[in-house]
Length: 111
Image (cartoon, rainbow, N blue to C red; front, top):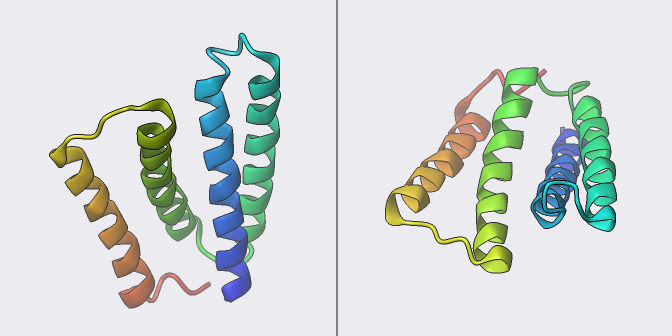
C-alpha cells in the first residue's frame, strides 16, 4: 500500500507544478511555463492512473484534490502574494482533516 501513496503523492506534486506553471504562463502567453503545464499535468495523470491500480477512484481523487487545493493555496500565498482569509484557511484545514479521517478510519481506502 505505501507504493500507492507514494505514486499519489508524486501525482499531486506534478499537478501542483502544472497548476503553478498555469498561473505563471499568463493564459498560455509564455512558452516555458506553458510547456511545464503540459508536462506537469501529463505526469500527474500518469501517476494518478498508476495509483488507481491500488486505491479506489473516490479515495484517490479525494486525496489528490484535497492536497492539491492546500498546496496550491500555499504556493499562491508564497509565490504570487495571493492572500487567504480566515474562512479559507479554516476550510482548507477541514479538507486536510477529511483526508486524515479517510486514511485513518475508512475501510474503503483499501482496494
